[in-house]
Image 1 (cartoon, one colour):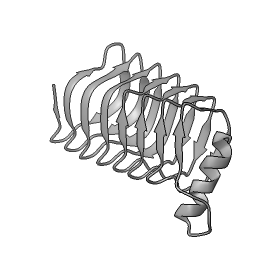
Image 2: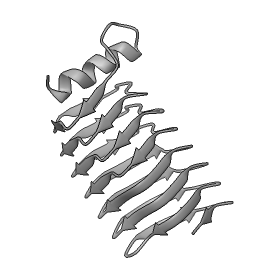
Image 3: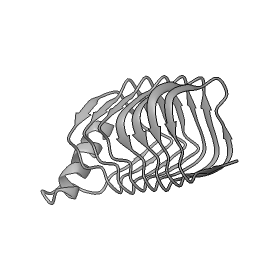
Length: 164
């Protein structure tokens, strides 16, 4: 079954209109999605290339060992998501909320962040390498083994954060 069918069925399930809970494992995706509720969706070892998500909720979802290349996330809600062992290369995140998210053993390389919040999040072994962007909020972010090598952001607001 294609990843697109599974993702759209999960959106229907979350909205109470049929469908079924999603679990992608070892699949590939390069579609454009908008306005979906993918909360609680579990993605494992899935490759996303050029995939676009707009106004999509990933609240309390779980992503493990996924690869994202050239993907865009605009106005997405990642509140409470768990991301483990994932790589993001040349991805863009705009007006995104990662509040309460847990990110571990993952890297963001050459990504662009605009108006993102990581409030109350937890990071462990995270690389933010050669990334750029504008406003990044991170009130209360807790991080260990975080590497920002080569990254530049216009405005970082890390209030009450504890990094490394």
